Image (tube, rainbow, N blue to C red):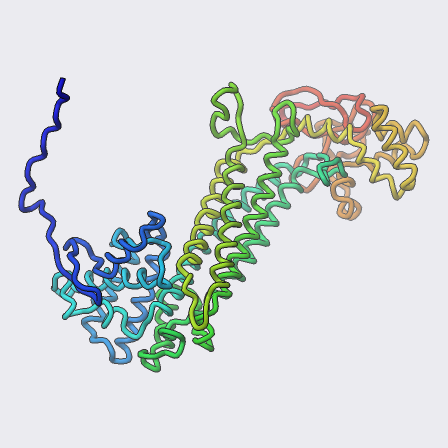
Amino acid sequence: MIPPQPVPAPPASDDEVRQLRYEHDLLGERAIADDCYYGIHTLRAMENFAITGTAISAYPDLVEALACVKQAAALANREVGLLEPDKADAIVRACEEIRAGALHDQFVTDVIQGGAGTSTNMNANEVIANRALEHLGHPKGSYDHLHPLEHVNAGQSTNDVYPTAGKIALHFAARDLHDAMEALQKAFSAKAIEFADILKVGRTQLQDAVPMTLGQEFAAYAVMLQEDRERLTEACELIQEINLGGTAIGTGLNAHPRYAGLACRHLTTITGFPLSTADDLVEATQDAGAFVQLSGVLKRIAVKLSKTCNDLRLLSSGPRAGFGEIVLPPAQAGSSIMPGKVNPVIPEVVNQIAYEVIGNDVTVTFAAEAGQLQLNAFEPVIVHSLLKSLTHLRTGCLTLADRCISGITANREHLARQVGRSIGLATALNPHIGYEQATAVAQEALLTGASVYDLVLDKGLLGREQLRRILHPRNLACPSSAESDAKPARHTDLQSSGEPDAPQAHPGRRPLGHQCTICDDWGTLVPGDGQSGTVPCPYCRRGQEAVTNSEV
């Protein structure tokens, strides 16, 4: 049987036939679709550099930065009399449209390209020129009226346009990353407050150490983000120095003597960034050190974010055979074969972003080192790598904040039981009974399963009141602040008038613990399930502490 043949498409009408225009360069003449704003130089770049399949339009910040540079150049050239006002106005108008999001689909050169960014600069020149021609009432390609190189690129070279635009784009992207890191920092800070009253066992080298609060653990993550935001701000200060006006190698050939200063001033106004012209444009044209510095800071951010995500995966491991200290919000089914399994997919994706950023830093390092004499020809891969890192770190921070950190809950009862079983409590006894006796108590507790609290009392090493003071949750977690704090308000929910005051972590927060019915200590924490009941005392482990709905 002969298979059915497809129905042939009807012939295209005259309106559907794509109109062509013809442009030429030093290699000859080529046909360009007339609805394209790019020209022959961009066409050749598309053919030569079909490398990643990712066009520069994938980075709107870079496209907008190119428009900013070309707009500043047109304003400077008009001011010094090298560009007629009508041409300058048309170029400026085209640049403003691109900065507003128009024509980004016409920026089609591959992100990785030979020529130190020449193809990207040519792409920008051609798109801006053809849109400016339309504003002047001329068809695209009529370059005798306004030329991509003679007018849009006047007083410029790829070697000062591309690095300047790259730095502006990195500023845009870094600003967005800074905001995303702040959002993640706030998410960790909110959890630090929420978990401020939850005592847990700290760990060093994955072994039990001394008690701390879960709030302190999450607060540390917030502090790390704050520090890295400051380092990012410092790194961005280095990329505020530009070489615009240096033209080919930094000597300023073919640029008006006043052009560099005027262009920098206009670019500062357009972008809002405090830019400055480098003191030595020859040095600035060949030096990629600011890119290397920024890349190092991004690697630092990635490494610390990845470490934080490692912690989150460890702390949430389980649910039955792991740490099980916190519960991450479920994001999706975790297995195609194991029913009910939920994996920490959000921390895992941030881990992978970090690995990518670290690899990008290696790329930037090699590319910066490979510069020769008066130019670094490898800035396209430098800018591409940095923009990838900035963009992915930004989305990673927002994803981690919104889809993970904000929904984390604590396994309060489990944490309380861990503290009660911990021999790390013996560390707090060192100043009072000596290291040797504290070690003996810790070893016996480990061998027999007895609590440190009971062993110290049974051996008569310390009195009950002194031991209660030493092992008080606030003294264990914040020993320096506990002595200076004023006596806390009474916790009347659980006490009669004759009982001691209940300690509080901070004013306005829940108490660190509730009084044990056997040893009268204040060690356990409120369960998070909203149910009335009792939980074991972490010190004597015999008594039970009452918990009511109103306290949860």
